Length: 240
Image 1 (cartoon, rainbow, N blue to C red):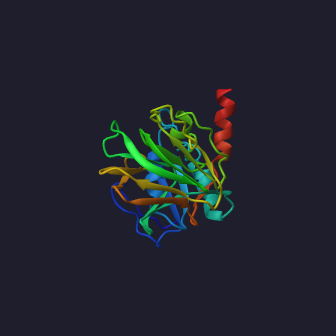
Image 2: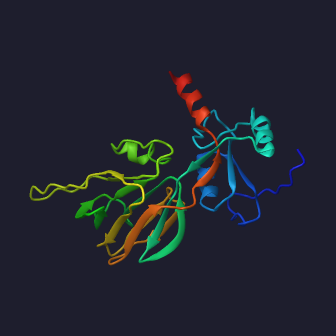
Image 3: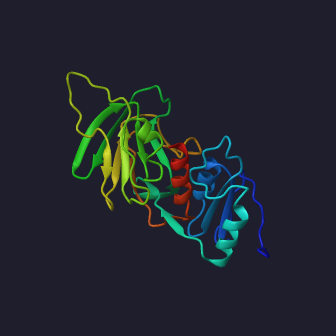
């Protein structure tokens, strides 16, 4: 097609500010790994083996890649803005923008996680197995599996869901999960000597030790992805 390109192994970082389009070849994990490294670049996910890979974030397969790529080169592809969340630790931006979800918990996940969580004007001290936080794009994963309801794909809200809240002495928790209004932050204060924040699975992690303050907010830099909504609709019809 006359497009200049280079290939980058998944284990290497993507140089920033060089490319107009980042194409991932693999599945959702490959797309998520690359999405954490882009800022304004357009993204196209190619599901290289759709017989075994869900490829929720992938628009193309080997069968229709040329057609979709030609539309991208012409500039006629529909684009979706997938909102990410960014992480601030102790008042400083960590450099992490997550497209999917994160888990705030003890470094040893079976251990008790102790923290305070602030949602809007409410703050609560909690003991649990940790807390999931997800974007709209990621809310159909761990959040939904943990009993939460997913958000509409283009929503700018965040979702949070504590895991297995520990109830003692008949205590009733109020902040048991839900949506965080657009523009608002979700704030955690660690009361753990050895806490962690796991970002988009186990790809990245941050220490979250006693006294640390983590703020999660919607990023001003969404992922610009070639539209995959029609592919999702087609899958739904096929399953029906």
